[in-house]
Length: 310
Image (cartoon, rainbow, N blue to C red; front, side):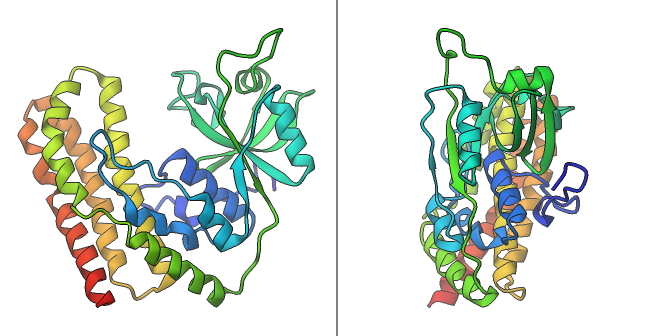
């Protein structure tokens, strides 16, 4: 695979309501896609998303699900020398690392974080040449190249002492169990059912509706905080349920619950634009009702599940 030949998975298609979710989910979608595995089989975890008071759950592929479904074993990697050495060592063992880095140095984030603001995100190096200072990597729904100064920013030089903070790094095996489609769907159905049982007891969207006006008022004077708030609430909510709908449709194209998930995703998208208008006009009370269709869809979604299980 080359940067030029790379084609993202359909879960990152331009026809999606939310083309990207969060860096960890998006990264695993493309890793699984590159291995020829259907990431939809592992989307059951999205059913358990809750409102955590400050944000909606930053959902991630559970590592145990990846092993159950695909036979991929992933775990944390200890870092005690320059990160690129660890990455190369794991590549030699036919493994792939997931490395926490600063998006300020990632060219694929041009127009957002690249050379604009510092932060943290996760990439998966695929080809690495320290001598040439060249890195090919997966990030979000992209496959990109970082070179020169960007390479140095991603992998800071170690002097006599280590850098101030070591990144969090995981690694995964790359030799999956390739199951027949029906066998994989049978296992995925069990995983979905388990996560469905972990869903919040109370409607998390209604909890967010109650908390949002006061939170928005506190953040209205800070553009940076406002954008982060929108990401960690409306984007995480909407993208999460769009993925859940895709997983349900993969299991059964006739499953009507996928439409309810789409309704939540679309409503969250609309609410994101409404949030900006709410802050600009200082009409804070007008925001919560925007989410009412999503709250009703959540209740119908899980009521339908209870009826089906009865």
